[in-house]
Image 1 (spheres, helix red, strand yellow):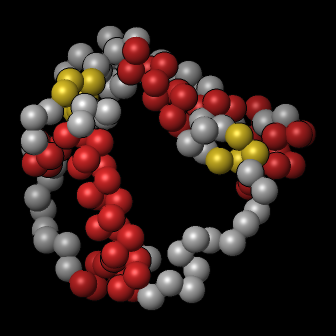
Image 2 (cartoon, helix red, strand yellow):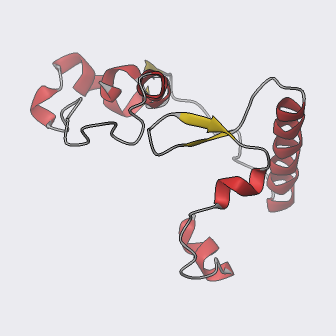
Length: 131
């Protein structure tokens, strides 16, 4: 299902049905990972299909190409500021997935970190290898 509809659309469908964490039966398989299930047309354009929305996109130049690290950091801060304005204005509402697989609104962004493993700190060497 995700292969043909995109992550965003599939996530919306699963969230609406309370299946984000697998729901009542997490052993269900909604789509096959098998390469044999690909149609010829899908296989031909697979590398150009946007996995978030599930549509074909023409190849283009990266928006980040040619930007300095300072410019990238400035853009990231602008994005965070705009997202904060959207959340404060009630346009979007950040949420966490509850035990029942349904999204539940959060009061503060730090709630998103609750329950995450804290095995080690993210260091500069990790940042270099993550690129």
